[in-house]
Image 1 (cartoon, rainbow, N blue to C red):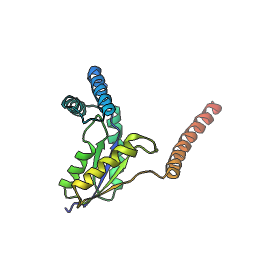
Image 2: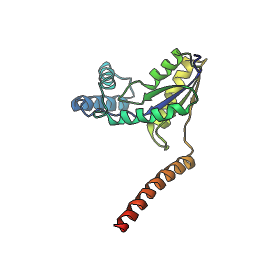
Image 3: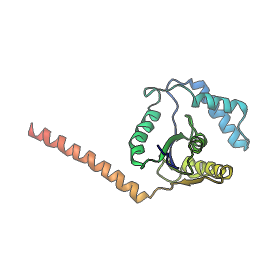
Image 4: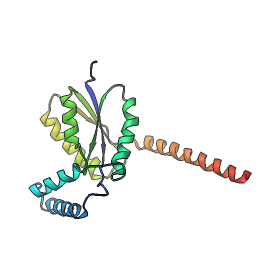
Length: 182
């Protein structure tokens, strides 16, 4: 079977597992804040803590965010006309965006479309971090086309949300009708 040379990466934020030691999270956040304030690269300790957190064992109970993103991916992937597919996370989980790009390249993908679950402008991940990382990856892989499918058309997002709201309004009306009949 021939593999598609088109790949899609769905990027989510990432969550901290409920059973991950809180003192490690606090230490990682403190080191990250200090680094950003000083404008320095990550220390070895920060990188190690980040990797421990990203590779922590997860279940739907301990990391409902990851389970939710995986469920969304399971609905999205069949709609992609055979494009190769990966999930990625901005923080706390693995694979990273860089790792997902490398996975797809290793599978022979030549064009990668990256889409974020973060729909609205103003967030640092979607607006700054993902574009900066993609710029670095483009420089490292000049033969690969990396497209960032962002920003979202907010009118389209609003229509999707309105349709979702209408679904719940219908359910509410049905329940109200049943209550009146009783």
